[in-house]
Every structure is written in structure tokens, then in C-alpha cells.
Amino acid sequence: MSAALNPDRSEWDVIVIGGAPPGENVAQYASQFSGLDVVIVERSLVGGECSYWACMPSKALLRSVEVFEAGRNLGGVKEIVADRELDVSAVLARRDTIVHHHDDSSQVEWAIGAGIDVIRGHGRLAGIRRVEVTTPDGSVRTLTARHAVALDTGSSPSIPPVDGLQDARPWTSRDVTNLHQIPHRVVVIGGGVVACEASTWLRALGVAEVTIIEGSSRLLGKNEPFASELVEQRFRDTGVTVRTNTRAASVQRDVVGDAGEGYVHGGEVVVTLDNGDIVRADEIIVAAGRTPNSADIGLETVGLKSGGFITVDDHFTVDGADGDWLYAVGDLCGRALLTHMGKYQARLAGEVIAARAAGQSLDGGAFTKYADVADHGAIPQVTFTDPEVGSAGLTEQQARTAGMDIEVVEYDMAALAGTYLLRDDYVGRAKLVVDRASDTLVGATFAGAGIAELVHSATVAVVGKVPVSALWHVVPSYPTISEIWLRLLETLDHQRRSPK
Image (cartoon, rainbow, N blue to C red; front, side, top):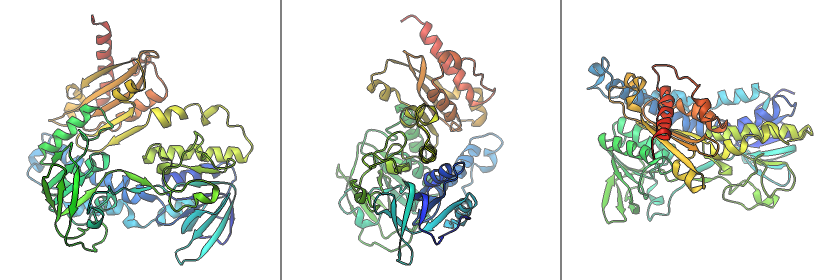
């Protein structure tokens, strides 16, 4: 039986609720070598948040900014572009092309070509291995899974309980990644990855006044402090106002419009801060965390509590569900709200589903050997600000909080020949966190232009627990920024040999 869109059948080996990248990966890995048949139930667009409202549109916008800023700081190019501005219409048009104008037909074609069925509609559990789907025309279908149901319903932007904020119809990440209108003044609530990336492209696209309101003492609080300092300084250099240790006390918008996604949602916004200051803007953006989409997926029908993140084991089997039939991956399980980690979780879950269906043992091997490290202590992430911030594993503070005996080493990336070739004004720094007991890396952080590709090598070192002595023999190419590894190791060696 060939795969199809909305096939007229009611039973599959595996049902996946949610067709974002993790859901696609569960379906693929559960079926590709096992002979199991799989269906994805998706209420919106196959490809999910990442493809249309998060990773892809945001990086499309930021790539244009990155290339332009590099050119403005590179001899032989800056003489041509230094007094120019980005072509905003062209940048947005490229973004629209990358998100396929919110048309998921190519994603559906991929699924069907891989032998995976797709059903349009809102899926929710209706008992053990049973799923009810409310289709776009309002009718309800009941599906049955012979082996497993996997949940990939993702998360949604959180709106903090600030007086008047919800009524002001603020932009969320969906609006700011899919903006079609450039406001003159913007206030951003939050100082994490989404807030910092959005502020980077908004300023570059011509927003005259960008004000970031962050309640804690610094931006990017989960990263090493030096990374926060470099990003904050760059914001200030480019005219972005950063207000840390500050919260919004109330929001007022007298005229609220019904403009669509990415268009200004009304009249002037007045934000009163907790210190009494007032900030006025044309749009307010909320980038203050995400809430799991778990409230309307039928968890109560299988004895689980509705709402909140779903707890899973390292096979991504849902805790509290009778039997090994229910799985959760991606944002929904709350481990790491990152697409690449959701896809990793999904690959494991798909393999586990196929193995259990075949009666195979899950003891040892790829199912468990590295999962405790990769999904807990070695998570990689890149924030595409200017400068970029990339990390893998633990920060110094996280390692110390965990009770580890560590040593740290830092190096100025601007001293590398490779970075000098990238930009005339290069600013950056790198840091390693080393576990003394095993003499292996438990964390690495890089900040600077072009550091994104360094993160994978750091992830390999952390997950593989590569000894520092072995890293000495991993020779970096010259002149590339990967030479930072050699300089960090040299500095570490110098620290170790120097008198205390």
C-alpha cells in the first residue's frame, strides 16, 4: 500500500501526532528499515514551527545581516558598501522563498515519498494506542496504533502576566520572524536567544529604536558571562538600548488593530517599567520563553495530567503511561527546546519503537550508551547574534554547581590569523571547561563572527569524552578559526606548568 495524504484507513503500526522535524524523524526512523507503517497527524503545516516560524526564517534574515556586516568591516568591500543599507524588500523576499511562502507541499511530498502517510487535522489521544483526529471540515476520525503513538506537539510563545500586555496583542516569535512591516520603534520583552537574535535583525533592517527589557542582570543568561558582555556591547555600539535588571510593570495600547502576522498590531504602545520609567514604541515583542502544547492532546484519557511538559525516560517513553507504547519528543518533553535536539530525540525514539516492535533488546548499544551525555550534559547551541555565540556542554558555573573539580581556560579569538582574515574589526573570545578527574572537556563556549561551525567539534569532544592529551593531536587547519583549539590547549598547558 503506497503512502498518501489523508488516506481512507484507520489503523497503522505507529501514529505520530505533530509533523514538525522531530515528528518527521520519529516517523522516518520507526519505519525506514523495520517494515512498520506510520502516519503523521498534523493540524497546521508539516515541517512545523522550525520550518516556517523559527529556525529557518530567523536564520534567513540573520544571514543577510551577517554577510552585510562582514562586508562593512572588510577592506576592499567596505569601500563599496560602507554607506549603503540592506535592501529590506529583497531580504524579506528571500526569507519568504526559504519558508516556501508557508506552503508545505514539498514537506508532504517528502513524507509520502518516504512511505509515510499524512493526515490533516488536530490529533488527540483517545485511550491506549487510540487517536481522535478533528479534520479541517469538523469531522472526527478515530485511528488505532498497533505498536506506538509518538507526541510532537511542540510549544507556543509564553505571554508573561503583565498588566495590559495580552490585550495589546504583542508580536511573538511568529510575527518577528515573518515580519512584513518594519516598525520605527520596538520594545523587546526578554533577553534570551529569541530576543537577542530578533533585536539583531530588526536593527539591521531599519528599526530606528530597539529597546530590550530583561529582568535578570544580563542578556543570554544561560551562557558564559563573557559572551553576554560581548553581545551587549555590540548592541550598544549599534544603537540598541539594553535595560537589564528591569521588568515591564504594565503595558497600554489604546488602539489595537487586527493586522495579520508580521504587521503592526495597532497604535502606540506605552510600557511602564518597574522603576517608573516609560518607554514608547510602535510595536512590542514578547520573547519570554515558551509553553508546551500539552493542554488539548488527550493526556487525561490515558491517566496523565494535562498541561505542562511531559516527562520521559532516555528512550523517550512517557513516564506514567501503562506499557511501552507512548512517546514524546521535541519541545513537548522539555529537555532542550532546540530543533536539533528534538530531532536527535526523535531518531532515538524511532529506533526504539522499531526495536520494541521486533522484540529486540534495548540493553546497551546506541540506545543508551551516549544518550545520558548527549541529551543532558552536552547540548550544543548557536545564537546568531553579532557576535555569534556557540556552546556545547556546561558553563563554568553549571559545572561548579554540579560539584565538579574543574579548570578553565580562555583565549582572545581576535589574536588568531584566521579571525583577522574574516573581519578587520574582529572581536571574540573562547573558553573551555575541563574536568580534572577525567581530563576531558565538559563544556566549551565561543563568541565571535563565524564560530558556529566550531560548536560541532566541541560537541564531539564533550560527548566522546576525548582526553585533552588526545586533543593535542587533532591538528587545526591554518589559517582558520579552528586554530582556537590549539591556542586554548597551549594556554591550558601554560597554566598547568606555571607556579601556583
